[in-house]
Image (cartoon, rainbow, N blue to C red; front, top):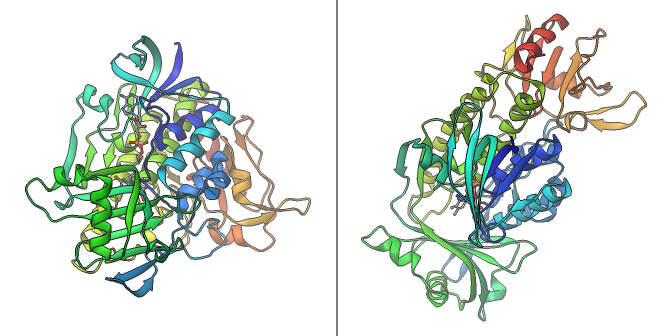
Length: 497
Ligand SMILES: Cc1cc2nc3c(=O)[nH]c(=O)nc-3n(C[C@H](O)[C@H](O)[C@H](O)COP(=O)(O)OP(=O)(O)OC[C@H]3O[C@@H](n4cnc5c(N)ncnc54)[C@H](O)[C@@H]3O)c2cc1C
């Protein structure tokens, strides 16, 4: 094989997969047809669970520096400010959740941060390179790449991952249908990144997300650390309304902003814009032989509730360690089937959540409604997965179970230094957490670590209870047991060792 994994598309999904594979030493190529990454603000809400994923991958500090907490909403009625409200609730402050506050980062900056992090790890995106077609067989994929200079190349790869977005060439070439496809909202929506000008420009302070709801939604969201403001507007459903929204010029957008706000605002420049009817749908399957669909290529959402990018990026995080286990440890091919089983269930749940949020936002003259804790993605898990083995005799009611996200906890090292459980989990390895109270022989494999942690304040015990917990590399409890003898058979089944 020339390469082990070929990734089509360097949006958030493809980049996270490339980062995870790079840190595992898996030979991969990542190609993108664009000039240099996605230029628009699109997916801005980064949820607490995604921040944890980025912490594990070593990119959370750079990402947080590129944005800020989701601001409060300043409601307006015409030129009058009315109430200020919280649109996005943070997670409860708790020892188990290190990043309780959803973060707001324009997608182009997220893509920049992830691209830079991939380069730090020795990888790179091949821009201006389009995947135009492929054939697949039992051992891999033969794909054709075409560069902007007109040259073409044939690549042989053991696996192809389609991270090529909602219009996925790969999904269409495979002929995998989208199921449940429907328009979530017939009202066209405009999203544009603009330089806002005009005498009333100072009223649009950069600490708030400014909203008007009386004459159709208008939302103005200045982004921290950038000079751009995101304009969001919805339009009445009418024949030709979408095409009209798609044809808006900078002057038209300026007029729209001035009319709906009543403020003397103009638009000097439009950096990026998109008009669309929010749709939902999910690929019938995420795996076809050696080809895997991930991110928007596998599921498309309403933007309401900020779930699409987060779900997409976590698809990649679920897949990275499984591909590495098959390619390096000799894990059975069936491990890749669990990607489809685990992520298609999550995608279905998240699709219905974003559609529900979208429906509640559509009540006229009310504007978007408060987003609850279910949007944080901290409670998503894989209890029903074939990889989740709950073998403890007693599980406290409402307590952690196999398949759940493995929570963080402040603790200490035997030498007395402060640490967190996430420090022990960080990296590409599995972690065996011994909370049985008796010594357990550490597994010999170098891809499993058994950290020595001191739980002086009882945070670990409170979060986990007692037992032996095998934490997957993507931070979910794979096995929970009382008996150390259960570990070897579980690993044998999982990774073929
Ligand atoms: C208005 C709006 C607001 C949103 N807000 C949020 C939010 O707040 N939070 C959230 O979580 N999500 C949000 N989303 C959704 C989010 O933007 C997407 O879910 C996310 O971009 C999916 O990432 P991806 O990497 O799978 O696909 P994409 O970001 O679409 O990336 C696909 C990449 O593949 C490349 N490509 C395509 N075809 C080929 C090919 N044949 N060969 C090579 N390269 C190819 C493209 O150039 C592109 O770079 C929003 C979406 C919209 C439209």
